[in-house]
Figure 1 (cartoon, helix red, strand yellow):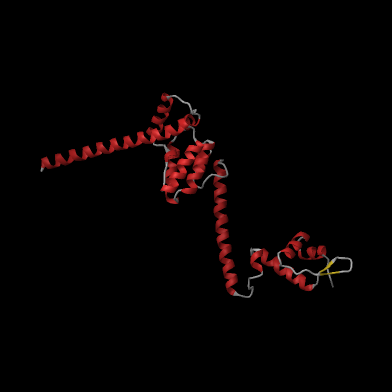
Figure 2 (cartoon, one colour; figure 1 turned 180 degrees about the vertical axis):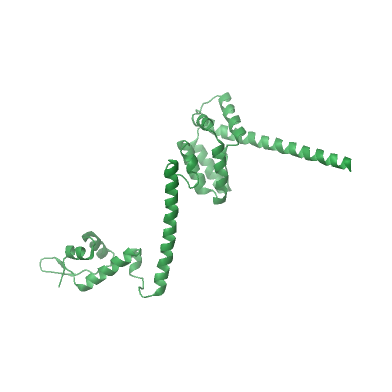
Length: 246
């Protein structure tokens, strides 16, 4: 008995186009043709197609089907490990999608930042994307509190600051950012990462915003230095008092 391409497709629950594709990639032998040019598939083609479809159902890529030894126990164990990894990946993806939906955040939000992403401007979201992709995974949690510490009015004021903003406007926003410890746009990293982030800042933010970021960084550094000096002074005073009592 012989079958046409359409009949073979219906018999095996696939499509004519799929069968043609299997011919092109060498997974299905070309059958003989009748005098009128129609293909005539035989039992060997049916077996070959059924085998291929089963392996595809198990998740084996077409490129590996001709090489796999279906009788080897190692093949099934290897496939099982790959499927477990794929399932774990899909579960993580599902959790990510659920978090994005729950917070009404943009779909491309980096993992862990869903709660703050919706309130970010387009340039801020783009900068967060770059940082989350380039920075070491263990430093990302430090960024979330900084973004959260930035109030919506302050974020808006920074976002709408024009490139030709005057000195007063620049300094006022820089003071507010430094006081809130929310200068997350100034984050840095290794030499290569720091260079990429600096380029991103130049591309995403206008000159006034870039200056505000730099000023806030300098202000915060001076504040921390002053606090440390005061702590040291208190410590020295305590030490003098302790010696006097002794």
